[in-house]
Image 1 (cartoon, rainbow, N blue to C red):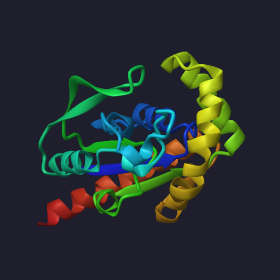
Image 2: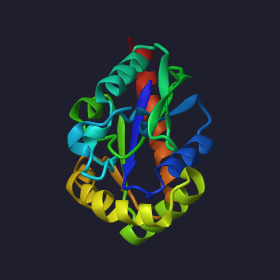
Image 3: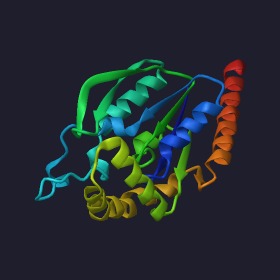
Length: 209
């Protein structure tokens, strides 16, 4: 099994890029969304005096559960991935079964931030998209899909999204095997080719053993 990490700023197109890779790949492939691993209750220091949560900080995620699930998938075991409800900002009681397919795409804000996670990844991809484009995409998404108001989205962007991006997210680029710009169709083809090359390498190793 190969696990591919796809990361980038909020609104950089991580989910869309993962879907393109999914559509172009002919083999077994599944997707894990890191958003599903938000903590149901954030640490106190990530809540401001007005009760607003900072969801763009690395400590907003359940690293222990995510690491455990990726290790189990590598071992050939299925896991019960959590389901996060963005309307209530809590983890749902429902879960989704994720099976150990030949390829697992892990997409999210901090997929290559944590060293333990990076060690489990076979390919690491960073989506670099200009901030104004990312902001516009986030604005449209959060209004249409998450029931947010324009004012709340703008306030959150300047208070937590932008500063967290500069402090924690942008530095992940140094760990990426390759960086993707706006040409996501071409980049998806390149990633699929790399995946096939990687699979061929492991198949040759297994055949020689």
